[in-house]
Length: 113
Length: 111
Image (cartoon, rainbow over all chains, first blue to last red; front, side, top):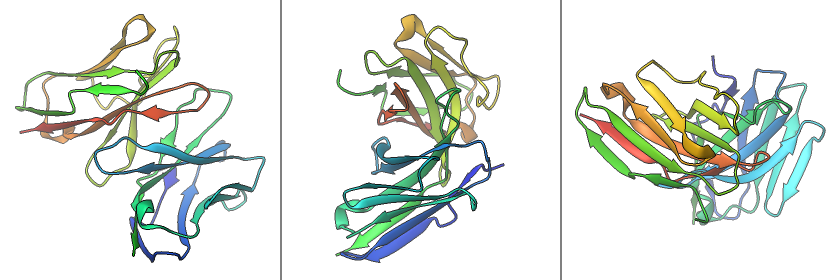
């Protein structure tokens, strides 16, 4: 039972355009969401997060949107750069309990020069 | 050290052998996690240590898997009688207040 789903295993965009990575979740108890970025042979690194009390969080070229009613979040990268090419994982958690994160399967983003 | 350190970085073992994977978390991080990533899969939760509390072992796939965390610091993940389906990248992370920092992982190959 996948509680966090990233239905697109891969995405390819042109440099300078917008990248939109999507994530859906099924557990309505989740109230904290994160995006991680992973390069080959490295561990995932934290990118951006959002609490369920917000519907948008922005950090430079990265913006995360949360639609609680649809149980959907998305990561927007604009403008996309070749160095953004990596696997992006969506993760979710229930605050107030353990800090355990539930991860999606990841989306491999390729930004073409 | 500055980050989470895992060793070895690569391990090839024969089916049926036992393996031990080590994780050195960031000093001061009270929480430590083990995840694994099998080919084409996401990050699968295995086990979670938080301070002196009993570990959350709910993600361990079988009783061949065990982990311990000595002195609230270094952790060892042990897989007994390895099987080919155990082949994966095993990732350790430590955190404080959701600030997960992952190590680079141990790539385990069971032949």
